Image (cartoon, rainbow, N blue to C red; front, side, top):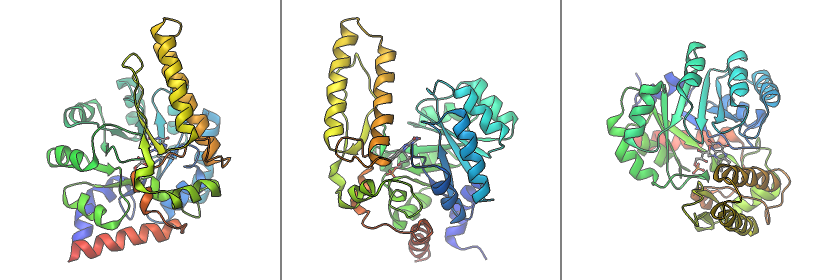
Length: 332
Ligand SMILES: Cc1cc2nc3c(=O)[nH]c(=O)nc-3n(C[C@H](O)[C@H](O)[C@H](O)COP(=O)(O)O)c2cc1C
């Protein structure tokens, strides 16, 4: 007989073809073959972050992941990547089963290419209305990500998105992200109709994550309120907010944003180029902190649940803990 928990997550595990419907949210620089294969081996669903990769590097990473696990995993593509078409080709040619798009919505032709190759397409839905449109565009599953999350964030809290969207979308699985750090919340999301959860911050402090020790230590030291969102200074430059631990890197971002606002308003710089410059800043600053260990000047992107991260553990232990707490809660 199926347990209450298994019934609740059936849609999610069937879609992901995993033991548990827990996605390791893609994290630029960190979600490479080691972390991704470890999450999938532990029963979750790892996702390679291709935002900062070339097509050649993505191909290598996909192959290395396949060498380390025969379990399913996905690839996360950022729609504004200049080589998006080449990256999509790699996903198709290497026969990755699932593709997640972030940083905007892919055009219909891109979605078609993937669907024709039987690859499942997952899209972030910022609202109910957009979620419905994305399903019409071909999304096989949606992810709703709340303001609590680490990295680039939307304006609405996870709890509100869950209430707004989960009761109304039944045709495709909906995965919930942002601020999830324990099994109670996994159970809560499932009870409200989620197919599963996506977790980022909690998967940084695991043995299999290649993050620099300084980055992991910064996570362990941090409190929830240290993970702050950047402001938009002027509508002339509509920056996407980013949540990271407040440090000199945040100050450097603000300084750069101010200077770009001035240049855009003076007609010295194109708005699109200025926004791209800010995105490049984040990619470099995150690498600086996450890989090189400069947590003072780099970007320590982290969600608010960083306050509950207090040790480095094997990823399998984190996943088993999430599942056993969720199970206890749902069986009770
Ligand atoms: C360090 C870091 C880097 C991230 N990079 C990406 C990325 O490249 N693409 C993406 O779609 N999401 C990215 N995210 C968001 C995660 O995939 C995930 O959705 C989010 O972390 C979930 O919220 P949580 O941090 O509260 O668990 C990143 C998050 C963090 C903490």
